[in-house]
Length: 117
Figure (spheres, rainbow, N blue to C red):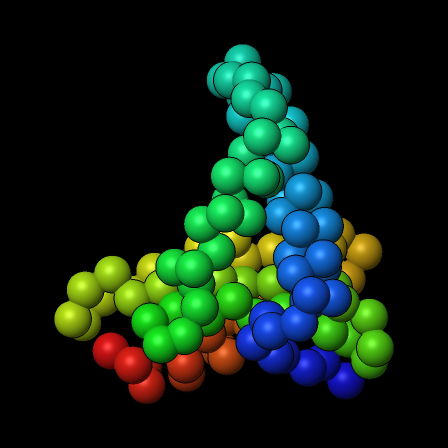
């Protein structure tokens, strides 16, 4: 069974770092293949980790997705205007895709964002 929870603990932040790294490695690979764009993945992850405040309450959410007891993905959202929000960094590990977790995460984030817009 899937579970969603707001990042709060130091262990949660370790999962965020790991998932951001996987996500950025994938983005880097795709951008490099398609457009020849290259960037420093560890540097980008470090930068993103310093900017997590925009995804924290009251105007944001940084949510981990767990399947049973294993963290398998994350989603970030932030308020960017009175009636406008943005979902970012939505990622489910490849081996857990095809189980509807991405759809459930999107529904969860939509429900949250509708509460603070």
